[in-house]
Image (cartoon, rainbow, N blue to C red; front, side, top):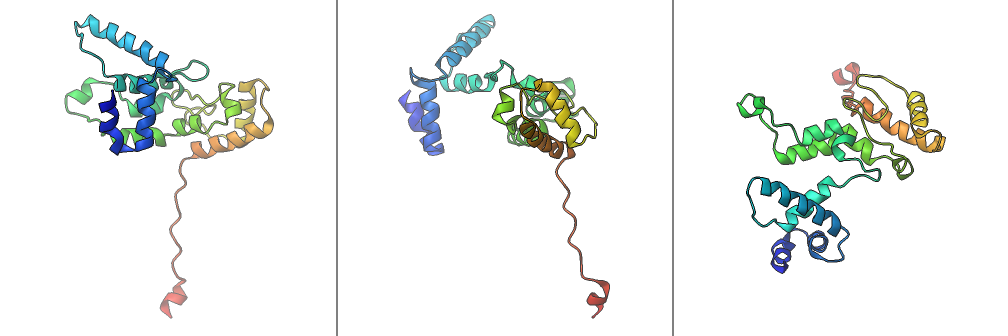
Amino acid sequence: MLSDLLATLGRGFFDQLTYWRHTYSPLSPWRARCAATSEQLTAEAAKYGARSRLDPRRVYQLARGLVLSRRGEALVNLVPDAYLVFSPPSAATFHNGKRSYAAPADRRIAFLQHPQTLAYALTPPKLSRLGVGASPTGGLVVVGAGESVNTETVVARLQKLVDGKASDADLRAYAEVLVRLDAGIPVAEPAAGPEPEAAAA
């Protein structure tokens, strides 16, 4: 247990100390979740006849990845397209050499850059508590796949989604974020060169 801490301190002291406390401390806020995850993993491994001891740090890591939202929703259902980028399916086309997976680090970056992930993370807390921020497959919260919508339309849809339980100001601020995310990253215009006459002079 202590050797686990000492072996990782060179990788960010305070972060590793926090993770170590969450993993091993009896007062850890993740203790129940880790225990449940460990029990489930042990049961699944037993089906294969595998009875090796589980790594507590990896159990904690898995527990953090599987934690549900305030409303009991899993990340894979909240940001389906972004999650697919991060964890693509094991399809035959990948394993026969016709396609290849991106490197894990690249998939993580792509996941964090995905509009669905950004929309979920940028949801104001007041709206998060009302269940706003989840996206459908191919869409972005209340914007459907391939749709071109303005801020007023998004505000109206959000208002319907929360059933009038949020202020127009909060909804409008979030709607503007969604419209920007849906539009994509703006392309920087090339810098204007000198006027023809000035260049000739």
